[in-house]
Length: 263
Image (cartoon, rainbow, N blue to C red; front, side):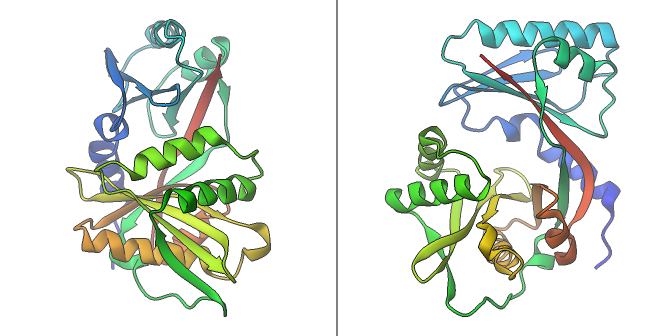
């Protein structure tokens, strides 16, 4: 299948920014082209379709105003300002640094047809896949994911995942198990009103990497996306997962870097 990266980037900008990113938010406040959302668990989030050609001085004013907005809410404990590599945003990096935001690692924004990833992928002997819905299993998946990423186990992230899965937005959680132990997991997040489903949270324990498990989890989520009528898949991918998605037919359309402020 011929894939047009420019068309995929347009789909990303038109369908997956602003409103699609703030589903489930407690509040959403507009500041010019900027959307400022507050989510359960004290998480603030900033995004936009573009910055309307604003100059560096205007962008600096928006950064300051957004920070005041979140700092005034004592329930907000951290804020992510989500940037994209193809945006025209003069002075944004410097303004974010000057206001206490810390850049995270850049990730590749991957897009492509779901059918390209939906084929059957052989699993190692003894490894099985299943969809997880029970709260105890969901919390176990969250703890395994924290371990895979080298993070401390977070009750807050587990609570957020339980809340997401109990909603009505169609989020699915899939896990790979070996001898009853969880070794890899990932979410499927259909985006309402779009052609797109996101594949998120892909995490595999180090001892189980390189065996095709993540690719098999991606394939089962792609098949589920197609059943839901979603023809495109999207993922913000680390350098570990990007090559797997590229081999399956997704392409990099831009990059994204989170900038984090913590109270």
